Length: 106
Image (tube, rainbow, N blue to C red; front, side, top):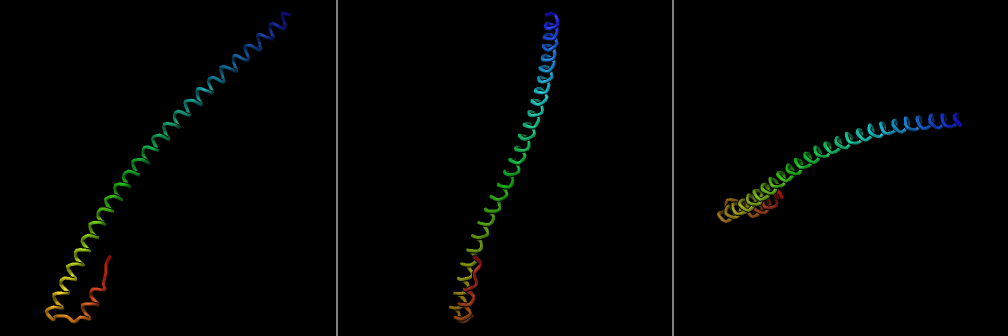
């Protein structure tokens, strides 16, 4: 019976040692997961900032494009008015007027 008790104590010590080792492994793994999570969050934050910058650049580009489109439309209207005036004063022929008005930049 003494031998059985000593064997049980030995087994208990072995289980306690294994349990301690598992707890250390769990703690190391938890720390690694926390570090990886932190790294991922930091990367996502950087990507979010880059997406925001790209969005702002696209919005600015779109505004510039709209402004340029409005300017081109104004210039086309002015061109047509000038061509009409030139035609009315006989400076250009009707064919030239029609040919010039077919040129479009829209």
